[in-house]
Image 1 (cartoon, rainbow over the protein chains, first blue to last red):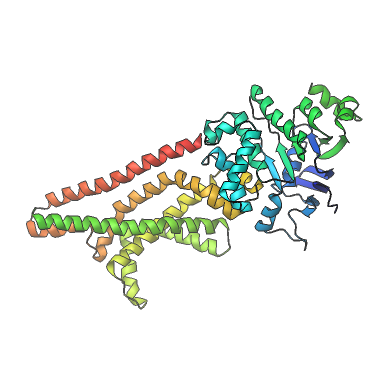
Image 2: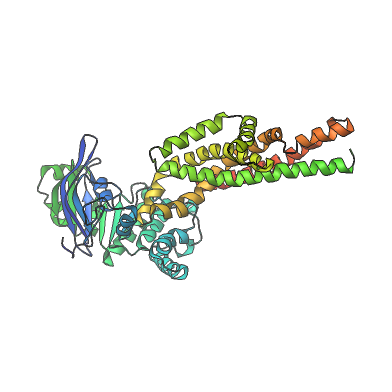
Length: 252
Length: 213
């Protein structure tokens, strides 16, 4: 497998019961690249994203993170929990519903994994966490508990938490879908800043103008198939399939 | 009631307290361990644990205490009364606690677990750092409930001769021929102990509510 890709997905298939949600999906994400995955709900885009860090297990196909296969070891057997966790640590994920840990304050939400997974010292982890809080514009919220934050603030903490592990790739699963409309902007701004800094990102989203602005590559999923893969200008201005033209008409 | 009667009552209360406390301490931890083992769904072992839980929950404490105390010599070792009492209470409370912890696991947020795994935490770190601290708080009301049941059920161990807070009232009235005063004091002492637990429970519930937001 090529070592110079951040994420390499090869002929991935996945079914839930009788429904095929992913069919032979292949996708390469280069370091520093931003790929957005678009598609109607039920098209398989969240499943594809969740397969990348093995929160869902694909039925067939392979995924490599920075050259390292996830989920299956060298002998072709299912990875044990420890090995799987080590590969997962190379990815950072931001969820639709934030999923912060309510018993920890903002600072500890961010330092928990660096300290207990990477083995960083508390001091070092906290210094880094404060830098990240600064980056997402929440330096004054270090001691706050998640329950006291707005949705947009929670999502920005979740982004900082994922960044703290210095992952090879950031995965965003509809990061603004659970937010009140007036809070969407602050989260999208943070993600745009990250793309400008060269972070590798795979983003599932319904925000079309954001996708257009931030992506290097747009992937369109329909019934588990990638039916279009293009640069944003091409995708939005001259889509090659009728399906995408219909989709874009409904989302503008 | 004279001074020595009071002394006997406090001794009885102390016996009830320390035997219950030891049983509770072992029972809470053992219940958690059983709940953890049951999560792994190991064949045979899982069935054995299910059988244990059903039996322990179905057996009256008095019967269990007698059974342990009387069967130990048959198996070749004598048991101190207190140890037999602790064993009976522990076997009983562990079974209930295992079920309380298990429902704590079942109800734990899948979203939070996924977030932990996504950062690269192993299942063990996820359990220790993310799940357990929250499960202690959310399970505490149920656990404390079980603790107060255990304390209220603890006079059962008098059947094997442990002189606890209830049993001691008998002994006092056997001398004074006034059964009412010692039993009244015993009631008051039980209320103090249970009252302290209820107070703790309310504190825990307030913490739990804060986690839920």
